[in-house]
Length: 531
Image (cartoon, rainbow, N blue to C red):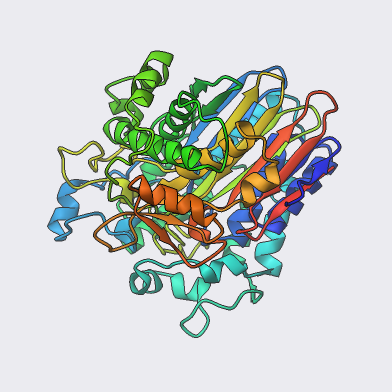
């Protein structure tokens, strides 16, 4: 059994140790959970560039100690020149995943930091921006060790990635990614962060940094123009929630796939599974995921274009109907979907009980691969979620937001416990969240055991025609035989801990004594720290 770290008053969890250290430092300096998270987000944007960066998006859930939930959508829209015609005229059949034509949506993460700090100030936060960004500036200027997970990561479309403008100079040594532990410096990025620390985060969009970003994007041929940067702002949105017997769970509305995560939990709760780590437990989650994805794929799009309220699918009656269609011992057909996507999730709960669940990403490893020369920022490829079919649910259109895999979770239990949890893993995130949440909330596993335990992932391998139920190698063989007998196409991946199965984390604050339990995934390069 893994041991769950317990902290007296406050804690952070992050997939990189340097980000966790930054969060602990801000908490020790008197900062609140939002301030700690902004500082962690800046640090990890530097030291974990394959997973996230300033040129990516983010989503926030924040719970005030008195119970109010805030949801922030810091995802960016397609640029003004990003039309289907433009891509068809270039003979594309689909959005390319790498290069300037992949760098087609505005990066929203930094605007999200700014919006979160506005909330922090309203709650009494007082720490200056130069302190919050200080660790990130130092890591970029003085250098940081390349993380072990960076070298393990699957680099899809690697040739196109390595040849993207600016990528080789920023990230390669002699044509290859450096070994884990090698020292990497990002001097232009350090200058950018330092400018933001003095001029303010809005400078990223409407100041000197924004001007340089827009000029570089135009120079490499991205469809984003200066006006797209100047007019962008992260938004406060209404969170989605689902009521379970023991808790209320929150997630983000479209364009996030948060609906799918809540649907899985809502359906599973109605299957009346009595014991964890049984065929019934995992079969129930797998089948709930299939039904949740079918709904998600009909609903989740740009929030302005959603034709039916996502909350309609989360009512007790709707969940009962869906759960009733799950057969107890027979697998429904497996949809051929991919689970690719690289992301970071981090959590923080402070001494007052302010809780944050935050996710930040450049989508695929290193995003589009494009590194902007004036600022050192590498740009995401989240626009890959668009379709060039105008009749599709997510067609490419200027100003439109693409489908988003990012979805941080937060739960409030009937007994007063507050849980911040999340994972990376692309489309696989809802499946992973369902596994770690039910292990803890329904079946009494410790946080550490829930995060450490082996995982499965329903989906296809890149380029493969079919889909299988991929499993890490530590599952009980009898459980796998039972799942196969139910009709699940089980495929062991040959690894006890695999990055593709997510870097997850969980933190819970207990109301009786104020203590915080916190863990982050052994599959990542991070952990938890606190006070």
